[in-house]
Length: 390
Image (cartoon, rainbow, N blue to C red; front, side, top):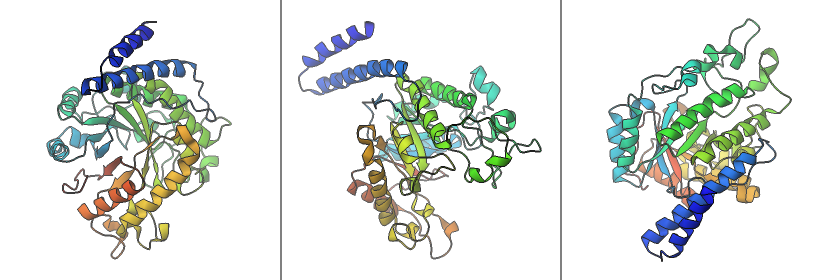
């Protein structure tokens, strides 16, 4: 009833506000209140079911068109943050995706949450999260918390029962030595959601989940590993984690986004790792396909060396993405690709090019031509092109 009265009051104020900037602000405030009321009602009745995603209601109606950069916890907590903030101040870039749980599974700040401390291994990479958030707000930066979910060596080694165990009792590792935790296990879900809720309380506007999948090639190892599972397919389990995350987080006023392989839009569902582009997309507010040209092999989109032709590669990937998502209709999320701002010299002589303003601009132009105006720049060292046309 209190929510209803608040909405009625906002509505009466807005309707008398005319067409001024103040009136526009009041309209946005009213829409936010309406959406939050609808989200609370919707999510309280939502039963997590991969085949029945709840209708999309945006918890962040006042969010900007996001043009962001990836920021490691080391950068966020160190001197490079000054350089990155200066870049955003001087360009149209306006957002940062900051590691709160990194690729190894470390929580990147000293949380006081007992559950997170027991299950994880909080570090002091970001020494003062509160000061960091104030700094981001001062520079009008849209803050996104990146949480790596099922690739988590810390949790796997600390709690083998939440991972995949070999016949000799050791936790299974992939060829790179990385450990993963079990997407079938709801304790793993709740651990990551608990961290996401703390991020929301810190002031992050969006939670971006990465490695929302089983390990690559998992289907070749599944039979030899011990782990808890249900009769559900891997695809449905991953879709339901994402839906559950949104059920828990949307009432807090934060968006949920997911990173996904770029080529997932161009191929059928990847049953082995449990990633179905459409099933994940219909359950998130934002989908971020990782469409780095360097990650496509010879022949993709009719290009001999995709890394050397970023325009054609991004154009082709966006065409496939739009085609894949078209059947979703109103369930289509915001499409916000990860694009390349690094040089992939490991591809070998003749197969790569040095990336700078031209290559970044070519990717942005290809997206714009397909009607996509949000994007994120990836550079593992957080060194971004300053003179691109953002």
